[in-house]
Length: 345
Image (cartoon, rainbow, N blue to C red; front, side):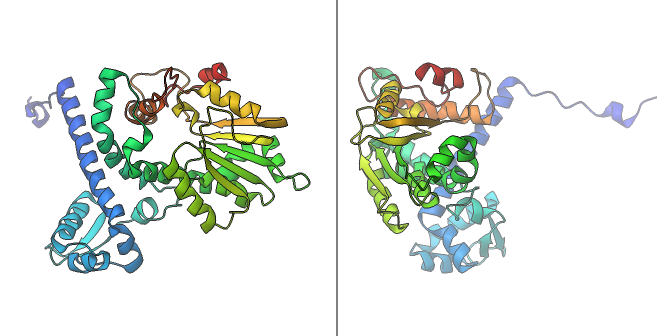
């Protein structure tokens, strides 16, 4: 007896090529949508919709000093992507508002869910792409400055939520001796923040431990210039000093009770030299603390989403920037595993 189920043809299993083609299409989709997220942050669209409420294309263009037609196209794209809610059938007259979750992820820069910095990676890499292509043939490094100011914005936006929300309450309690040393009011601790970037970790340490003095060092002049503004704005200028310095060389000052490397050792051309410089700068009984990427214990392929992100960051960002010095021994984000850390130490 024949049944309806017998007459339904089975859906053929897609070939490996079909699956990969679909996956790469979705990755292309994600990329072009991320460009549009960059517009929303860079041009102030998300912030205006969050702070000032829903708007039509004409209203949002006026609020943000942008042109109406381009604003309308962006609003329609964002609604199609599900990041905005459209009330109305015509993009030219519809009213648009933020979808749930957009404020926390793309507007509130200290939210633990903020990922707006991701969108700045795209133009930063785009700026450096010709140099990156050439580097594969020459073996040369690509300096951080080649990625432009978007690189600094991306780096600080990706790191700041963790420093604001996790550094004091989650990370430091994992090293109670260090936490106690920072909290000691009888003998104020001196801290070095190595590879400080724009200084958000330095700022949070000074805010959380009012007796601590923090010196932050970074080789990038733009990062240090921004950081000094943030230090002044947060009212810790008397206890946080940010300085341009090569942390693989002897540090300008010493006598530190704690020297921190926050998520930067894997980027350095000479990580062992940086660790040696940090140790030489310690006061008696001082400690060097390295907080790095949480990657798998061993090389795994295929990898999960975190491993895939680290691997891609290695080719596009960390390793090229770490090969700017002769004799570079840059580790990269994918290889900064516990066994490698023990070898470096």
